[in-house]
Length: 335
Image (tube, rainbow, N blue to C red; front, side, top):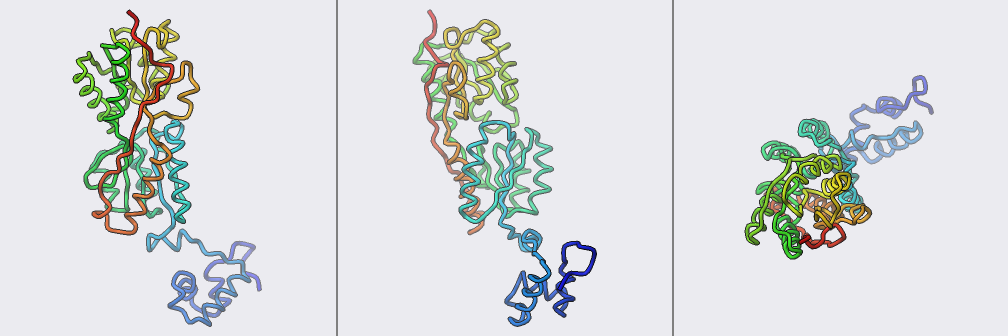
């Protein structure tokens, strides 16, 4: 028995014709076998096997929303910050029987919005990692599919975030203990919720320690952004800086080296996130470490919890610890 046509893959209509049943019966035999006579269902499966017909699990699942797919939108897939997050999320999704679909938003709220429009119908749930969308746009997405946000706190959408306040406090206290009295914060993207929280924590911590504080930026969260920050930083009186993320910090160290400013002799630098490679640069970067693999894993766990219960019951925040990792980019203030 061979399918009709010119060698194309057999269709549901080929199976129906060969089995002597309606196409709708073939569809039910695969999607809802309990609603088809057992003998008929077995004959359909036998014919499908002989014809080489294969069902499409995605197409079969779209009407019910059960596709065994989860989505994660990242701001920039080339940023090492996301490497371990994606690994942790993918491993947890796989263990639960799901496949993780990853989308790169290229640090663009418009690209992120378009990506959501295209992928939400395909997935059972969505993770927004460091989203640049507004709260209202995220709520619209969350009404369509279970959603978890990362590095952001929302009262009505489940979230997973690191303890930015404690991490920033430990960074400022570390620099104050080294004798630095004038500090700068190298800001990240204006649309970043985490950037706003880190700047607020920076202001509070420096105020409590009676330190001078200034905000420079915003800068792109990249090495190039850090190079731009270095040109501005050297014009100010600050002797130490905390950057929005490790890439800005590493870029700033490179930029200051080109300008003849030595780290940490002339300027101390602290990053955020402890990304892969933060200990490879010269000098190795002092940074506030986040448990990135656990970050991704917890996000998937929160998403799976929503799939098992109501969104209201699954709401709330998971706060992961942050700690300072001291390396060679910070030193005592020169007299």
